[in-house]
Image (cartoon, rainbow, N blue to C red; front, side, top):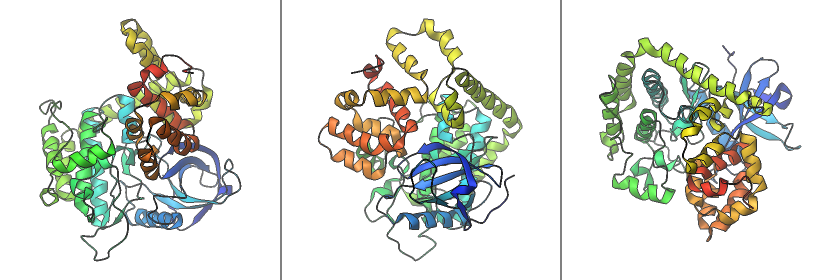
Amino acid sequence: MAPACHATKPVDSDSLMKWTCVGSGGFGCVYKARHKQWGFDVAVKLLHDDVGNVMPKDAALLQEISHMEKVSCEFVLRVYGTFEGVLPFRGISIERGIVMEFMSRGSVQTLLQDLHGHPPWPLTFRLANQVVLGMNFLHSRKIIHQDLKPSNVLLNDDLHAKLADFGLSRISTSASSCKTTVKVGGSRKYMPPEAFEVSYEPVRAFDIYSYAILLWSLLTGKEPYPLADNSLVALQIPLGQRPSYKDINQEEVEGLKELVDLMKTCWDGNPLKRPNSRECLNVTEDVYSKHRKDIHAAIKHVLTQLESNMSTHNTSGDESNKTQGRMSLNETVNASRIAQAEADVKPEDRISRSAESMNAIAKAKFVDDNRAALIQNTTEVMAIVEELGEMVHRETRADIEAKKTSQEQMRELFLKTFHPGGVAVKAAFYSVLEKHHPELLEKRNVQ
């Protein structure tokens, strides 16, 4: 177990080595690095200079660290300290960030993508319970997370879940008379209907609603409203729109019906009718207890599948991606499974299969090599932005929406997201093109 460290203690760049980018988004970038003295890997989160015009970057960092210190527990990501120093690959400017626990298995979002669906039921129920355990602890400390979603639930080696990303967290207004100027944030697909009101002040019921949509993703293995843009979501959620649960066979396994009933109660349009986190915990603990005996077999099954995918990827000849850790699982599929099924693939599906077999670096290179043609021919820009999620900064989204043509929108996306985001963002863009513009991927060079 990693030793405890005081969050106020600085960690300088000389203490860290083996830097690797493991994620980026609207907030900034997250790097994996090895601490020379401690002897284990840590995550270093660096914010963009502009974090949404809500507050100065240094103030945002201090607020996030403060919240993480208050809610440190088994089900919340640990903070080790503050980072201040010069990155070996980003020039001579001083960077500031947060040094945190590194979660080697990615997030619930990446797990769902890697498995192409929900995990085995015992693991699904444990994850659902551990998210509530983390949320309940936050609420007991009068903290609202305000951005609960699959990408903010991280997984360790044994697939235990911890809540992360407290950049939008705040003191509960239901427990404090203090008023703040912090904007209501979060991903719109996970925001409750009342949050779209101009004068809304977040309370704990915000997280309860977000948990319901997160639970839906866990139970279905899918993303909510995959084709809806932000404006449509903001319009339909207050009118009662929710993800469909008709395809969930509630009789398939014991306890599933109880979780679906909890989900529906948690996303009630009236925040006063939603249960509190302790009431949610009573349900999720009871459901998980019915399957606890099967959890080890479920974890072994999932880890074997993930390692099989990783092994196939690593033997494909791309040695450089070995340093990317679990992130590479999001950018490849089991090559042997593809080969066995290739004879049955329809001609129109071969493009998609071919695209899946490419590694992240090849996808990013394709995007770079075909920049001009992609700007000219990509039309479903806002749908693509929506699927890229937090990789696109909130302010960048607004700038893109303001552009009059798809070409102008794409130029903005390249300039403000793809160029600074690096391989991971470009590879994600390539994968999204498979759904919205497969014709652009028919040839390796669209120019």
